[in-house]
Image (cartoon, rainbow, N blue to C red; front, side, top):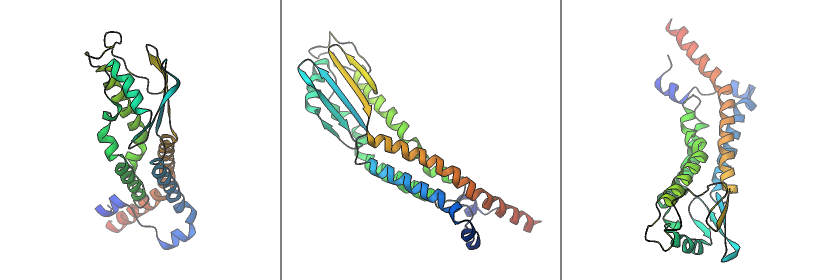
Length: 224
């Protein structure tokens, strides 16, 4: 049986093997590198957009969410939300936005680490990056639902608006207000990172599983 270290990290590539199959072993590394770049760049791009149409704002109001801050007509939207009893947007996901950049950098480093682990355990390192796009949607939905279902009963228009769940993606609205929401380029880069990471593990397994099997076979032969 392989040692604990070899079991976790996987076998190293013999020099002769690397020279003979350089492309095979370089492919997962290059794919993981591309995935890391996409995720890192996503920090600087919007993850979510929303346009709100209201009678008093004929040109519409716009909100853009990055992983760590909000931009756009935040003050004006908060003013409208105040009348129906919804909390200020800045209170949503405050903890997540504080940690977001560092969390993404950590995921980038974990994917990089996966390129150097030549065993099945490499998948565990990259799982956060793979699951991140789904986690972003889940967190966005959680806060939209929390804000929409917990309206202030003492708000000026509380009697005319029932608790509701704002639309996360697509067209929605409440009363005279209409909203149009979509994911931004940053989110799609994160999706691209997740997809590339999954593809990278296909080539990772193709390259390193035979090495692992041969290492186990040799140790079993020596033990016999």
